[in-house]
Amino acid sequence: MAGADSDCTYEAECTNEYNSADEIFYRTWWNLTEVPEDIPAEAEEVHLQGNKITSLPAGVFSNLLHCSKLNLERNTMETLADESFAGLHSLTVLHLAGNRISSLPGGVFTPLVEIYRIDLSRNKIASVNKEAFRDMKHLASLSLNDNKFLTIDAEAFDGLKITYCLQLMSNKMSSLNRGSFRGLKELHRLHLSGNKLTILRQGFFEGLDNLAELSLDYNRISVIEPGTFDDLVYNQGVSIQLYGNKLTTLSPDLFINIPRPTTLWLSRGRWNCSSLCWLKHKEELGTLNLQLDFYFPECTGNVHWSALECGDPGRYIYLRVIFLWCVYSKKGPTQHCNFFHSCTKIQWGYEHCQDECDSEITRDNPADHSWMSCSE
Image 1: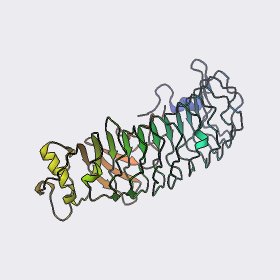
Image 2: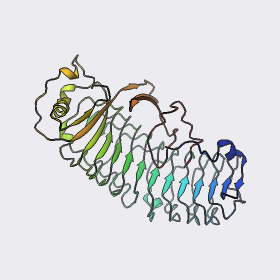
Image 3: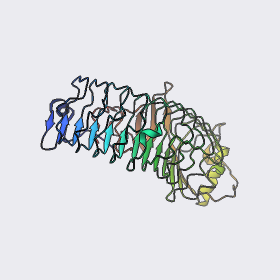
Image 4: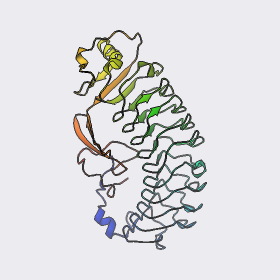
């Protein structure tokens, strides 16, 4: 998880213009309205966050042949030019979060032949333009958190190569489509937390052959149709995070076609516990690892988990199920959950530090989600 940079404090970022030893250029929080012309050609990192830059003209960075990191967070850009990043052939990390970008021109990132991480969180993007990401062979992490997505069109990412993580947290998505993520066969982690999804259907996760982590926490999911998880066939097993939703029942049919061990994260809930009898029976037989995390499922109808008498569902299912204790705020933006026996506060949006698409949340200081001091 990212934290404050021990080598360059926030104060240093505000005062140091250029560190020749490290070849890092800082011009942050200066109220600049355009990219400065005096960036040294040998700069390996350029930090221009917190200004009022409104546009990136074509070729504005064309002399920065050695630049590997470019930070343009928290400016006021609404659009990008087709060749805004021309010449940045060594760039590996690009931060564009916290602007006002609503669309991406086709091929805008094509010059970035070495890029592996792009952060477009906290913008106004509502759809994916595949042409913007064409010919990107090394892209590992794409963050589109806190944008304006209402859904993901079928095959929206088809033909793209994202090898590690795709983040679409804290959008306004109420639905997905069959094949929304088709083509992302190398993707390892998919984060859809904090949206408004209500139903999960078969085909939503089609083509995610190597997915190891699926985060669906803090949506409004009340129904998961049979076959929804059948496409999750990663040979090392899959972690599915479903806590903070509106589930009250859970069928074993959801997991009979998953060939590998699966970890399922659920809220303690208020469950129709008769629908969970199969979990209790499998736990007693030792074919299910039911980790209660000190909390049993909370049952409706004055039924207690320990008093349930359950028959044999007749299927062998290997799951690791973890129930978390959660208290929900009526306002929605704040949730309290028990994670790994410690109380954690989750703040909606993208205002907590992340590193390499790590969705772990700040535990040491849960009230502090300032992303201004986050570092790579």
